[in-house]
Image 1 (cartoon, one colour):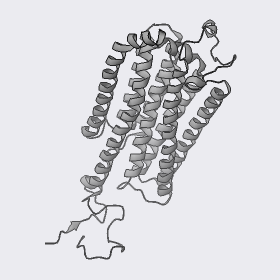
Image 2 (cartoon, one colour):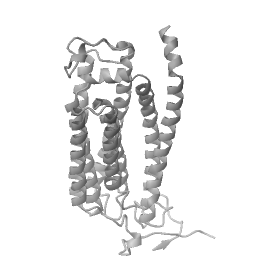
Image 3 (tube, rainbow over the protein chains, first blue to last red):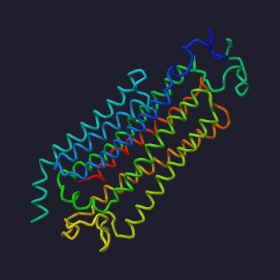
Image 4 (tube, rainbow over the protein chains, first blue to last red):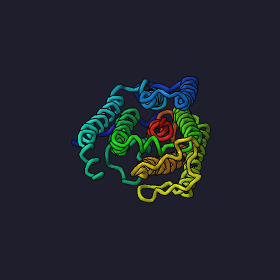
Length: 119
Length: 235
């Protein structure tokens, strides 16, 4: 039995056959852009203040907010089926696992290595 | 319009040439391609994840190296590059949007702007790398800074150089270098999509490739968003 493939030869007005249903408004893109520039300046300005170890966490926090804005709006995750966001979350989870487990080892044994190189 | 498979391989199949046979609709093709690109981005995140891990290990164990060496990096140039890449992400998102709205000329315009921003980014990186080379700020044992090397002239610049200070620059060049390679590859992809846009391939039904290249480009921006504070904003 031959398999008949069906093709849409003409664009239909049925919304299920169109590409992405959602087009991001240009105003949203511009607002996100402005926010990203402000956050960039903020993270730069934060280096003028000495917060000790918190400087690093503040910088990472601001970077994560910027990354979130890029992912949600520029990369369309806010309007997309959540499966794509799941793929991204899985990637970040495994990087986190990778870095944390490696750090556990590295920090644990560094004093021994340091002692060997000094001696 | 139904048809059987009894047509010559290279004929006009009587259907949209940009809808592959194994998809039943443009929507399905688009979603399949989008998932494919997201999975590729997952692999890219893990690729850079390895280098971020190297950064984390060295910074955890040798924080004094990072605190000493970062002064050789130019914060204003780093901030400028961040702004340039953020702008390129905006123009890329606008290009995708224009393709979705059946405005190919506007889409091409935004793609050209994206390429210009990318070129500016690489130009700034070239200036930075050139300074590093001239000032002897290279990787591991090649790290021999000249007297005038430090950009931020604070009192600690005269401090003795910590052991293995060149490691900071090893990681710096590895990460920003790999990132720059990704910017180059992204420019090639944007250029390809630009050519196809000018040939009128894309419309509101079929704009997947513009979207996928956009996703890749935003990832390149994302990675820089983390590289910038990790290297340039060390306090």
